[in-house]
Length: 413
Image (cartoon, rainbow, N blue to C red; front, side):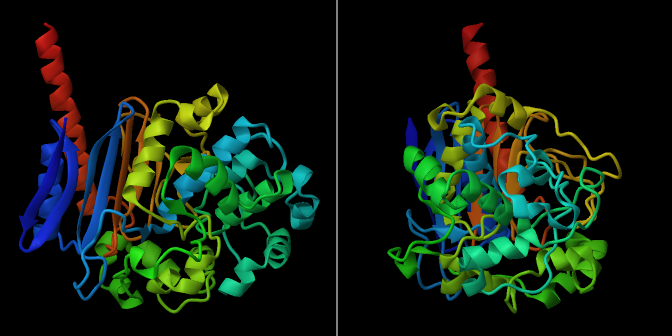
C-alpha cells in the first residue's frame, strides 16, 4: 500500500508516494534539503517489479520561485549512459550486431588509423582507446550526422585497445549511435525513443523534442571550474590537475563541447541535439522504471537471456593497469555500464550495473535484490562518485528492503 507524502523540511515540501515499509526514504530525502544543501531533486525506486518510492521536492530554478513538480525533468549528464546502454542491449538482443563484432565490419570508414580490430565489446567496456576528440563541438556540428561520422572515423587511438580502460565520457555514445545508424538506420536517440521509452512509457529523451515546454526542465545550479579547484578532496587532485591540463587525456576526453561552463550543456541548443553519453533529460521515475525492468531480466524490453547474462556478469578487466586512464582511479565497466569496483561500490554483488552522472545523479539495477534506483538533482555536487545525498538515499532503500525481508521471514516462521 502506498503512502502519499507531503512533509516539510525547513520550508521545502517533499511530495510523492512510498510503499509501506519505505517511509524512511522520504525522511532521508527531506534531510537532504535540510542538512545536505539540496535545491531540487527526485528519487524513485522499483522493487520486484513494483514502484515503491516516487518522491520529489524543492525547486526547479535557482531563484527558488518555482517548485519541482511531479513531471519536472532534469538533465542527468553521464547517467544518460545507462539509458543509452539499455538501447544497445535491445539492439544486441535483436541481432543487429554482436559484442565481438569488429565495428569496422559494419562501418568500414571506422577502420582508419589502426582501428580496424576494435570490437563492440571493447567500446562498451571503455577499453577501445577512443576516449578523446580534438577540438570542441558546437550543437550545429553535433546535429550534422555526416560531419560527426567523419570526425569519429578519423579519430586516432589513445592506447592499444584492450590494454587499458579510460572513461569515454562523450565519445562512447556517439560511436554507439553511429554503429546503430549503420546497422538499423536510426540514431541512438531515435532508437531509444522507439524501442525503450515507448514500450515502458518512459519520459526520458536523448535529444529533447521541440514540443516540451521549457519550464518542464529544471534549471541546473552547476559548479564552476574554480569550485573544482576548491574541492580537491572530493574531486581528487590528480583528476582536477589533469582536467586543467589541455594536453592530457582527461582534458581531451571531457572538454569536447563548445561550452564555457558545465551549466551550458543545459542550454536549449545543447538540449535539442543527441549526446547519448551526456545530455539525457527525464524523470527519476522513468530511470527507475527502466532499471527495475532490467533488474528483473528485461522482459518488457525483450532482452535475450544471453544479453542479460552479459549485463550481470563480472566485468572483464583490460590486460594492463586497471586504473582509469581518464579519471585516475580504479574502475570497472561492461556493456556500457559502470560495474562495482573497489573505488565505487554499489548494489549487493558484481551483478549490479548502472551509471553515475556529474553532479550526483545516479541510476542502477541490482538484479540480486530485483531493484531499480534513480536519483536526479539539479544542484550539482562536487564528488566524482558517491554524492552524500545519493548515498544516504541508497543506503536508506537497502535498509528498508532488509527490514521488510526480515519481517516477512519472521512471519513465515
